[in-house]
Length: 174
Image 1 (cartoon, rainbow, N blue to C red):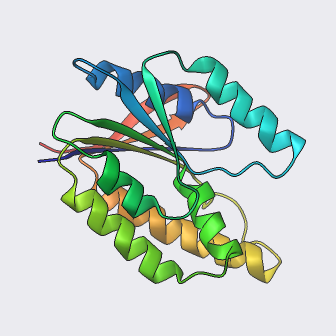
Image 2: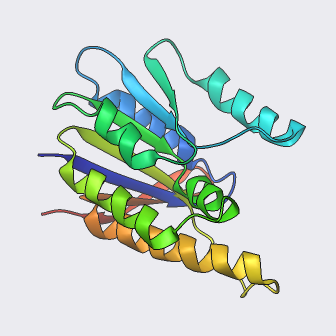
Image 3: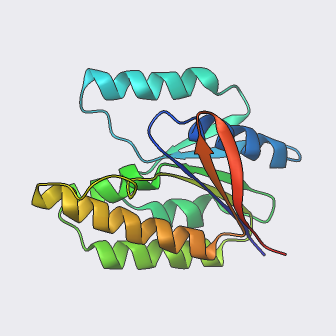
């Protein structure tokens, strides 16, 4: 049976670093799999990706999956696997930008998570603490990301909220 963990926080809150430590703590023998959803379109994103790569060591196998996240989970999953998905919010952005069916993509992802046999750690940005965005695409993102984060939290055994590099467990399976 899978062990599902969800790490959520604001931009630059320390959520990815926390999730990486959590993943490595769960690796018995072997490597953790880092499932990256970002695509590099500009220098800023290249810098963000480089920062993440520098922080990770040789214990990581990289899988790039900007769109078909469910298939990436199904391919990398095994009873002793530790998968880190970074980040669901970037992934849902990719789905929106490519004008794919958000509901279908989310349902496929949730199904893959619920079918997983290893440990899966998901990272996402909390975008629901601010004001309602003024443009339609930003509102669609806010809605889709909020629904996705609720679905991830619902199926997760543990949920951590990260603020200023400090993780607080806000959900735990008894």
